[in-house]
Image (cartoon, rainbow, N blue to C red; front, side, top):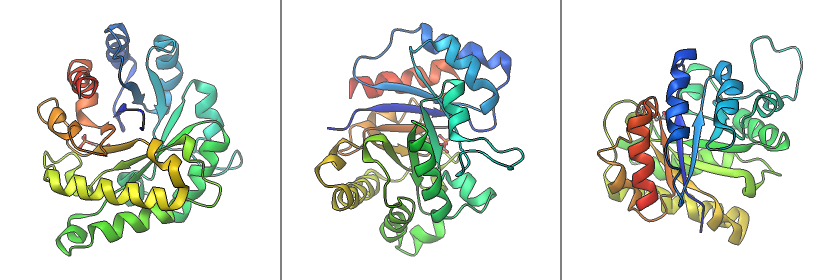
Length: 247
Ligand code: PGA
């Protein structure tokens, strides 16, 4: 069975003062049945990792596909690792939309992240237009296949299903839809990697809140969540972690 993971994604939020939220999360009793991860802006990773001292995992939100080079403003996987990160989110729909990231680029980033010793959290998800056209499964399967190059390591991979229309909107797919997509992702991963695919955590992301977390975590093949807005405050994220721990 896949290990369970409550992952926060602060996106472009967080100044020094917000490290108090990391401190609060670390000070709380740690869950026994799931892992806790905060993916933070690069400027906070080093300090958050020192604060946490291993009590929770710290991750980045993106990395470059190359190990180093003349790429002003970019950050390499090795830099994230060096700063104390253990994970990195890749192919988030905001990166795909705002920076035109293709599946091929995301696939190269996954390899780069894993080569540097990071766990890659690969995001896939359909737009509302794709869902309305009945293309959800086709779209997420194609993104998954296109974002995993030859050599991608299933042991250092997490897949997050994040419907674009559910991110930051308060709208969540009905349970049957999450079930269907997670089952399809698991089947695709099994076809690709064989038996070890059962150990790849599958997260749901998109408007996960303390109020709906338990319902989502009760679903088969949902091994945790990638949480945006509700991860910014330790009190809210703590409730989501507790729901996963109890599921
Ligand atoms: P949200 O974001 O929880 O604010 O909807 C989720 C994400 O984009 O990872």
